[in-house]
Each structure stands twice: as C-alpha cells, then as structure tokens.
Image 1: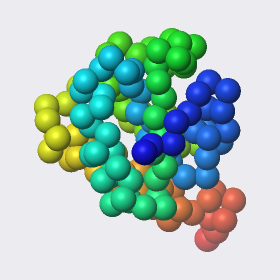
Image 2 (image 1 turned 180 degrees about the horizontal axis):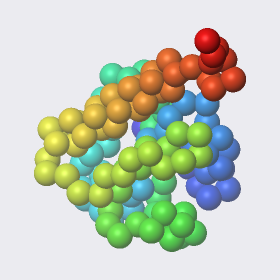
Image 3 (image 1 turned 60 degrees about the horizontal axis):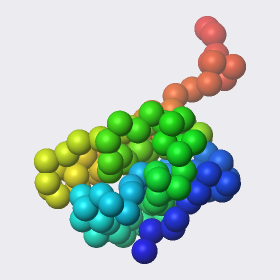
Length: 127
C-alpha cells in the first residue's frame, strides 16, 4: 500500500523530502486510479531508495487539488526539493505509464548529475 498523505503532512512528507517524491492524486470513485496502483508499487520497487511514492485522496484534500490545479484523476506529479518537476495527467495503458515514470526518473538523474558535475563559479580559475 502506498503511504497516504493528507494536507496536514504534505509539506513535510513531499515538499521537505530528501529524495524525489512521486505523488499519486486519486479518488475512491476513480477506477483507473485503483488500476495503476500495482504499477506505482512496481515503479517504487524498481527505483527503491531513489524515490518515494505516496498517494493523496483528492476528495479529502481539496486544498491540494486546487493548489496543484488537478483537472483529471489520476494525476501523478514528481516533486523534488519542493518543486514540481514532472506531471502526468493522461496515459494510454500500463506500458505508457511505466515508460513515462521511468523517463521522469532518468531525466531527474541526468539533471542531478549535470548539476553536480558543473563547476561552481567561485571555483573557476582565471589564467
């Protein structure tokens, strides 16, 4: 089962997390929301400690649903350091979902790698 997040602990568990967080916005009446949960578990297993996956019941967290301008459910958003990095609102099947989530993480890793490899301006030596 995915860790369930509410408005009261969203800032701590998502925005303040030390790893990227994939947030699955769902509702009990949404059949597709329930159908993708096994793929989200598999995604979390594949990426292990590199990402945290949580669920937010949009019906019980209307303020979050409004803040992140949810237009459809399910909506999946990848956050890092309190910022929205990627959003997935529509997909065409399980394979499309899996591929897109893996691309989110690969893009995140590439972005992190390029930031850590860049030399800070204050360390640049002039000849």
